[in-house]
Image 1 (cartoon, one colour):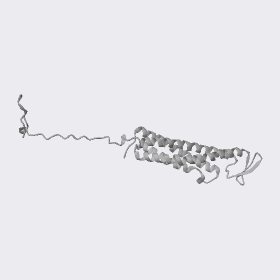
Image 2: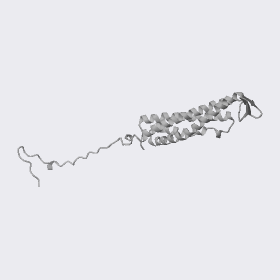
Image 3: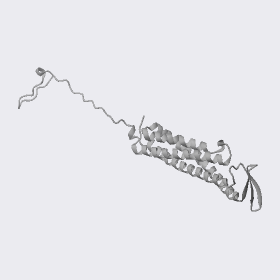
Length: 213
């Protein structure tokens, strides 16, 4: 099994730790947001945090062990997460924009505790907002803030995965020196020594060397 360079291992460790941090924040913020919105946890984007956590773990493992196998996994998953979470981030941006409008409208709403709805009258238009927990309708502003935090963590995760794909390609595909063996054994074979009586004596000075037939 090949190894990666020390600098590349440190890069994998740092990027993996950032992904784990972002994934943890996404899970926590999604849980709080689901509670305030009075919806099931299934509807929250917490599962995106679990997706981001997988390459984060591989990045940390590759940084600690310096093995090429987890580095390859980090490279592949970084590309996949970059594509998938990038699409989800674009959809989440639309949701945050809608929540920003609803939060602005909610300032003119009154909470009806019996029906758990908000009676709104915004610029002459009357409508109801359902599924709003809390004592008043300003909880929608809290939901908007939490959703904005989740969106920010998704954007950071996409940037880290983009950097991780470049780092993984350099560490795995462009670094062949570390795959060569470092320990080389040199064997020197010497001729067998001849007995003292059979050693050939040099010819006397001035006489030619005898020819062997």
